[in-house]
Image (tube, rainbow, N blue to C red; front, side, top):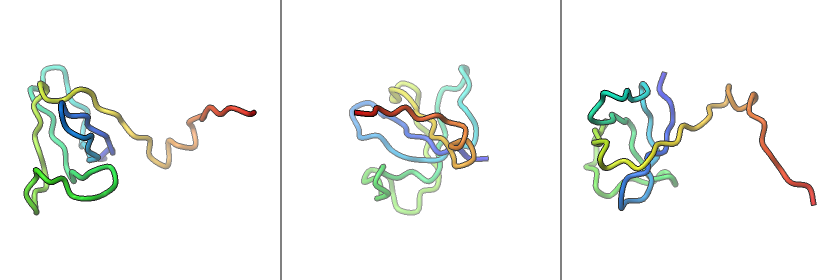
Length: 82
């Protein structure tokens, strides 16, 4: 099952994409699919029609795993009452 993630790339804007499996510590690169900007627009440095991208770990600052709808019901959001 593909998970939606936000990949933070060094000196670039973060990108939204899907990842089939979590990267392992022994991996040299991360494979992502359906790469797009967070607002849904195309990424300007990726060719049209590209379906998968391999990013080396040296270019990735960190990866955020997004919660899907099923897990969302289990997450407790914190809020502040004024």
